[in-house]
Picture: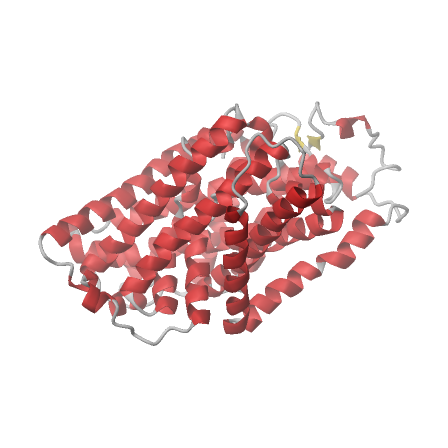
Amino acid sequence: MGCGASVCYCLCGRPEGNIIGSGIFISPKGVLEHAGSVGLSLIVWVLGGGICALGSMCYAELGVTIPKSGGDYSYVTEIFGGLVGFLLLWSAVLIMYPTTLAVIALTFSNYVLQPAFQDCVPPYMATRLLSTICILFLTWVNCSSVRWATRIQDVFTVAKLLALGLIIVVGLVQICRGYGDNLVPSVAFEFLKEPSVGQVALAFLQASFAFSGWNFLNYVTEEVVEPRKNLPRAIYISIPLVTLVYTLTNIAYFSSMTPEELLASNAVAVTFGEKLLGMFSWVMPISVALSTFGGINGYLFTSSRLCFSGAREGHLPYLLAMIHLKNCTPIPALLLCCIATIFILCIGETHNLINYVSFINYLSYGVTIAALLYLRWKKPNIMRPIKVNLLIPISYMVFWAVLLGFSMYSEPVVCGLGMVIMLTGVPVYFLGVVWKNKPKWRVTYVGQKLCYVVFPQDDPLELVPLAPSKASD
């Protein structure tokens, strides 16, 4: 994401910089576990990129038809109304962003600690403590300076790409030396266990975590220069490139690791480095740790932008739309995301967390694509600078329905809890948004005093007096 052309370009240099993240260092284990074979897991990675391409083309149409920042939330609110939009926002604030941050932070701590615990899993408390320290530190950085956060993202994106480049090059060298036995079709499709359709659906959910970020450009549509040209360009360049990188990375893993070794590893890239890099194996955990560190920084930035959009629409407390008077950083929104992430860190296991966030992600994507189809039917003559073939959103919706249906069948507890958490937003919406004459509170005023924040100067909300007796949330 970025400022000017887009947050993607500002923070990461390219759109794909936001998609390529820590997921590729942890999702391969989950994909293989559910797919059951090397061959099928590689097919899942390739098809996962194809599904992202279909979805991103639909989002490009929405982005120029409804040129608002905020992504899914803004489009669904505009088309389906406040309640549906609020539920997406509610699930994003409570589940998607904090859970994603928790997974990335746990990946960071696992890769940092794994060299010290080579023969066992790093202690639970150690990983949680280190993850919490990382989240707190980067929250402080983002609260202190936008420039610091941007520089961190630039530096650590390079580390991420170097780590993946090293894995791919070393893996291809192994294959050229004749060590790719696991990739021979007769071996690759030997199933560790017979996969059901539901398990394959869960494999797609695991892969989708690594691809998450393909729709981030739509969160800052208002800041994109020439969106009619740059949105499709970002899609056509980034999605195929990311799919290629992810597929080659998995091929590299399997060039030197058996499926059993990959499933037994708590840090796949570390195990890969120990097998092939010898005395330089220390490079891999450091590179992945730097990568995930930058990923946390990027998600903190994005989450604050979504909170700002929600608060601007009156769907979240106005305090979350405020920025620091001197540093111009959204401190209340960052603190909310930090607290929610630390809470989730204490209650979840990595792969279950990925299933939670991927299920909610796909649920949100499906609702957004349904909104596009509804808008096509309801307002066929509206100005659409980009108009995709109708088969594209329909194909996506068919895949979406099958994926979520079988995911709920295979993991009813995980998916059911995700649905319940999302639906808890219904009473919150009526109490917090629809009920206009509720008692006034001093939370906004007190929050302003504590965080030293105000509304942005060009925000119409700055015209609202914030005397203690009038402040409300």
